[in-house]
Image (cartoon, rainbow, N blue to C red; front, side):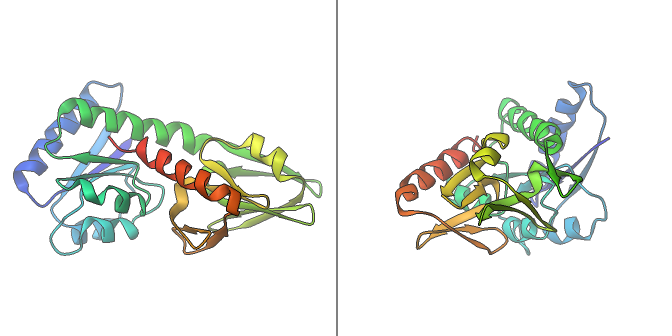
Length: 232
């Protein structure tokens, strides 16, 4: 059962988004719960995990960006707003899409398709490690960054750090397009990059990852390309 939240403080837009989303669900072999909220505060009080959240960025009270910071990183957030200039800010909180009002059926359906695809496919990809006679399976979506020191690989997630002996070159071949080799010792998941400052990638967790001088231009190109393909 898919769970979808719509958070919009203008009631006529909220109603329209609900109807369009229901129309989308009816057109697919899906079953879903769709719940609506008129404020970020109301959404945050909810105890349900939402697979997809459609949210106005400029909400009254707690705005959409601040609300998103308090939502599970596993939720796929689609921001809906009238202001194009806030697109980059949306991706600082891991939004997967950004739609400009007014939202047509076609554009909303495309956003929902991509969010659903991301939920189903990327969430299921895993990395299998063999170390000290143990087998460990890591969801790739959970990897923040990887680093190497003295031939020892460290894979960092928000909850655990996994260690094994190997090379970053080989690990890089096992990961997908979300990852960028920003330094000879680091691979970073671009999904968690909030920005760049003084030769370092700033992660949404607040951690900082070195970017080599020769990779800085390529890193910014990768970041902008990553964001561009997420904006509709």
